[in-house]
Length: 96
Length: 96
DNA sequence: GTAATATATGAACACTTGCTCATATATTCA
DNA sequence: TGAATATATGAGCAAGTGTTCATATATTAC
Image (cartoon, rainbow over all chains, first blue to last red; front, side, top):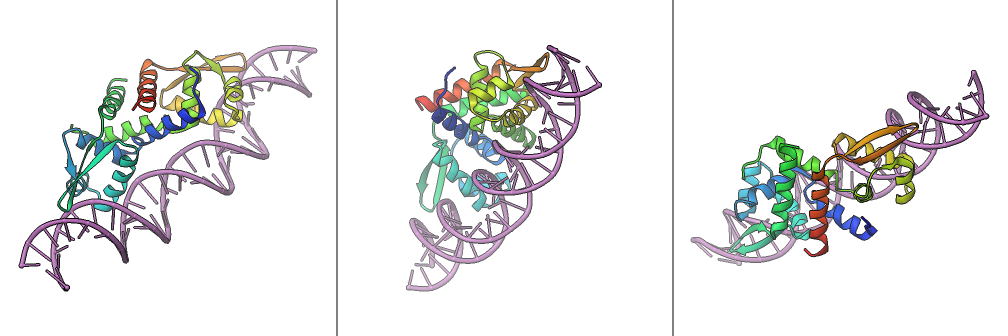
């Protein structure tokens, strides 16, 4: 399995997106559909600022996508790779 | 998708194992079969100490398993979940 | 226009991480 | 036994991360 340094970095960045419990919980919530920042913050018991900061990272990684409606911003998962990664990880954790 | 705080932490720890380029490259090398610490260090152009430190983490996460032979220690991937995670990540990076 | 609401952003700070360097342990060989 | 080799470990430190707090921006309602 040859792997360029660039791809090693890209892979590590990809997995970094899920390397924090707050982000994992955000992803888990978004699996059920889109949600606004405030609703996420309440569910997660985090400040809206902290959630917004995390969403920014997830957005840059193209894990989530934003939709603006009035003064709210709804976030949803960007593609199904995220869900696949998440589920595979969960499988490993649950009966690994 | 309900997710306990414990499982969120476990998931984040799982993905943390692949959140560093050095560890990703170690995994990539071990996909081809077991390798000793010195050989890994040479291939990766890292000190043996740095490699050993990373292998410790991977061992604790049960990503790799050690086999001692004389004064060498050969490492190999512990289970196929690791390879699945790696390949799915690679797929996402390559044509995501 | 002003006030209220929803989200984003930047600075600051505590905490974590991955390395280096020195040292320790374990094994082989003479 | 002692020297050489292979790996592991602990301390220390620079760099990175995730939060809080204050502030900025954008939208709606009045």
